[in-house]
Length: 225
Image 1 (cartoon, rainbow, N blue to C red):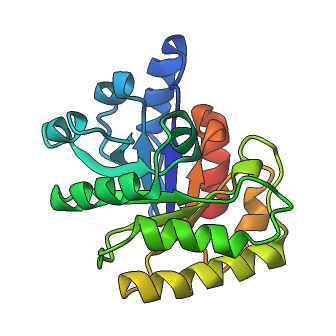
Image 2 (image 1 turned 135 degrees about the vertical axis):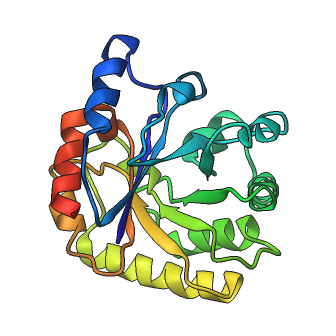
């Protein structure tokens, strides 16, 4: 089974929302676990039975309300939130613990900012070790999302990506005591998905802007399934 986590970020234009949801509710993908993460204002519109719901980040007030909604997943540590809200690995670690206490699966985003970063693994290791401190759980999902790749149309070299994913597996096994579900994010679209699908150790994808267009999401699903 493969995972597709759809991060809607700012959301779907309201004039397109009804059509998007109608088509989404008719999609069939038996070998894919699809998770839709709308923005907070559009969460209540998504009530389909062929996908699960996630949310984008949490604060102390929001997590209290999650159990009133059918929320199963939550994205934490996204580069937008790290930059905009100055979220530290310690803050992210606390959020992951709170999510796990409330039986919600955290999706931890990690990734280097520069394409030519000389020591990618040092950056990722710090985000993993500090973000997962004192956590032993196979419920955490890891999304490797190089910041430079987001909306650039560019993805890492295939061999380099294979090396990074294998290395993440090793570090997570040391920190978590298990190898978690590992996703790739950053310019996942109908052009790059065929290349990404040749990487056997990837469990799925965190899809951003491409998932806002239902036809692009359909094409990604067709390749993955």
